[in-house]
Length: 239
Image (cartoon, rainbow, N blue to C red):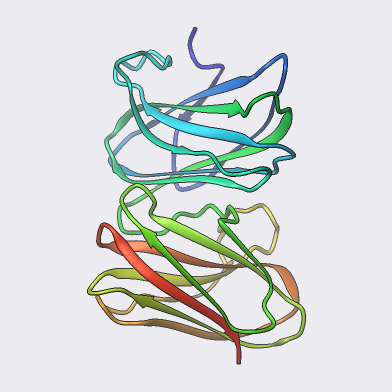
């Protein structure tokens, strides 16, 4: 059986699907294609129970995950946390995304997909890390790679003021940093929602300091420009 849903050719304008997995429909499959090499970005949000997502390269283009097809990415978060897949520089051609319920879970979900050029940021905003109210300095350590090109930190501003975000690459890696306000709360970076970006050279710290008004849809994105793997630490603090 071919994929249940055909999404056509991905672009940098996100494709968003709202659906459900449960007892009567434990798996949904979505076929899509890339018309040129590019990053594949996938976000699974709006969960009420644990749901997982996988992406396969559909080598024969039949819309089915066959034994010979290659799994290029997967995400299996815990509970109702968002899942995301960001894979660098995939070949033009056909792909299939699978959304699977975990165990006996039933859940609605929002599936977002896009493609972006290699070395640029994903335009999807799953909350990989929920910081919550940013009232004191917080530090985080993580890594990026060709199989995980973007990390999203979601935070809340309760009181208007200035905030500083400092990205420390380890060794000579070159991650970049941008600050985003999701004004329409669609979890996609739309035109006008990037507040500012820092993209200094390899091995240097990226720093953003900006005045922010109260609001609960702010995101800091750390993303791969060059390097695989990229180890980094991120500090977020009110000034």
